[in-house]
Image 1 (cartoon, rainbow, N blue to C red):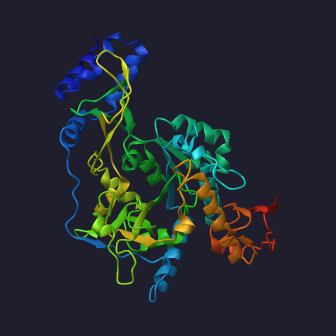
Image 2: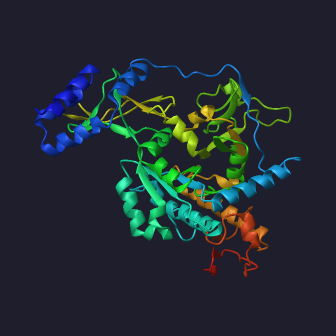
Image 3: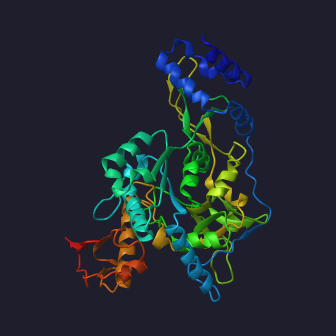
Length: 479
């Protein structure tokens, strides 16, 4: 046995995790190297601490004592806010022209729940051209870069499961017209699954049972990957954060980014009114004098159902995973060498190999997975703010194969938004039973906002019943 393996055994024994090497001596060289690399990537002292705090003992979710509704910046300025909003838009556009904005996409998910075998970002999502999610975002960034007169660097976090495929997909598609030097792809961190006694599980004789460390881990990965260093080199001061499953997202929003900057916020968020009191989205609240998100499963139902005198929900600020982050804030969170965010426990069914090396498929939860959530950084941020936005304008994720949040509902919502934009641009759009009676798609290369489309010289004055019309910078393609 070499000295490195002896040292690793000793380190594992010190934290009562030596069982992960029980098949090690019988592995071939490649298997030994694979397992060794996985173990060396872990902070074993932290693993020991997490196993004790969150696996062997269930740390209860701490619900704050004093929970109040959050005061948000409205979607459109109230009386007296007009100057602030105008200044914010100017600031946001200035930051773009100065190269101080980067885009940050969290794209570690697979398309499994959509019936797609591959990275979710490859999933075809638009109504006419069937553009994959990656292309939808790339065209937005290409358009904003064009208008700003300089490239917006794009930071994309993948996972161990889809990193190679994502990189290949970008190469196969010529990086969707973007300069590959302005695309920084890096992997999310991984965490081992534990059995109920706090021991790390093996998925195979030569591999830990690993899973991503949660979207909160994205803030750690920015540091470890060198992405933060790249931002410093480029002069990027703010990140526009969004997740891969929402094609309606405005990857860049000068108002949002400008408000974030002029208010001195270190982390800002967008919110939508909830569809109902128990909608499965996080809730922005003021709790213990800090802005934070309480998950739908943790907000007491009696609070979730409280109403104002006008009948509206008292707690009506739903989180949609759209944020703006100061680069300096992310650096500060990583300054100690560990990302200072809480860990969340989830009991899951995790396949594993038993002591004889036999693969086991559990029929009930047998393991604990630990994740960190990005919204847990909000209470740590100075001057954190929330901007209310419109669900119909900015939020229609693809999460499920059928039903709510499915490709069908997302395409419907893309068509609805396109119809609103076109009508604002003085194009007649037919309607049937309250829905647009046409299939519509607007390329971001033509317009990234309703106002921008209204300013374009669209030669088409009317869409006919049942038509499919694709609008891009070359005009309207009617089929």
